[in-house]
Image (cartoon, rainbow, N blue to C red; front, side, top):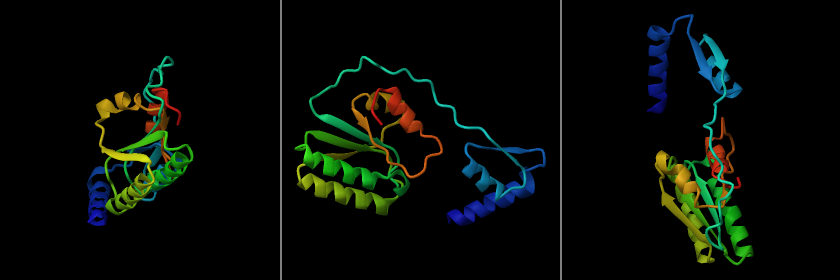
Length: 173
């Protein structure tokens, strides 16, 4: 159904809305090439500009346990399965003196099930890994401040907003 909607959308855009003077905006070379494959108009690349964030250099560690956070969509592109594997291996080597909380909307149900099955396997070994649900955008910075290390082994980021937000809150990416 997505493919049909996309074709209908492109047909309407090309037929009724695009004029020769119109310029499209892309945030990367890859995005520009994708847009150019659909339209003959000019495509300009303007990178994303991050929000200016203040780093709290006086941030104090909350507990003796090292706290890891994953905060992104749950989809193969973001690398959560690999993050769970790496955390599980690390956690078992340090006698489970750390915890890993996963936040984000589930974009791929099949992938999410693979991730949650792996979580359960590591929990049986004593690892502290837990899916905590979705964080509303207005609470992201507040949530990040509760953790020490941000994990996002993404395969492809146009601009890593989440990474910049984590660094802005004093987390190690």
